[in-house]
Length: 297
Image (cartoon, rainbow, N blue to C red):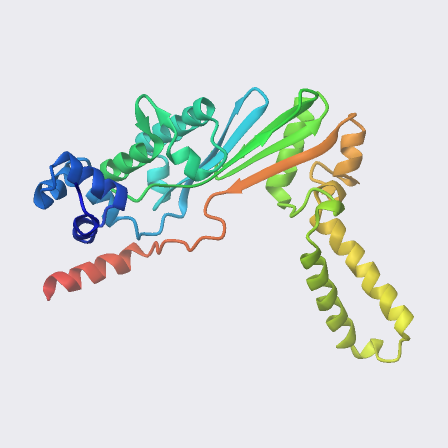
């Protein structure tokens, strides 16, 4: 019987996860040192040491299986590694695991199996082999109906990946919508999807802007209200996909473009590598200088 205190001790010693530590101790009959070696041999301890590093580079990808599509983001520490053959192989394996296991989130995808290994085990092995932290940041599963079509667009090899769902049959139109989403990154599909909190916040900002403009000081309240309503209406159109000026023909909106091709936007998902994440410091000259100074001391 492996007790919790022994698992905790091994975790503190190696930095590996609790489940990995417990498994190592079971494999090694409770021998702490042997378990630490076991983790090293499997590459888990080495990978754990990299767990606190920032991995904000990498690639996104999307795979389709019938009426289901899976988007995912696989991160590395540097853009150089994202072009590595081992990294690209791992990206492909994750796609295959998604198709075979139907995960709905990153945690489900990590436990998905391919060729007898979980995706999490493959990532741990890749981290140990490649020498950088590799992590599966997010996974999204998107479903469509039989009378709908998927569109896909990958920008810059997968730095941005967009999936669209349209009611219709024209794959080129679906791809065009994806290209638009990649370029303009709309926050919502249409006005009905806008979060009320976003509207309330924008309304308060607009009111403050108008109040702080001396030119509006003498205007009656009903005029001010119309000004707020007008600016808010403009804000809605700017953040909604269907109301934005279409990327290939700004003389029409996305919705007008879709209508001209007997199509309708149903859904879209846009992944961009590292969005919202802290970027790794790429000042290698400073890193080398710091390392040299450390050696001297």
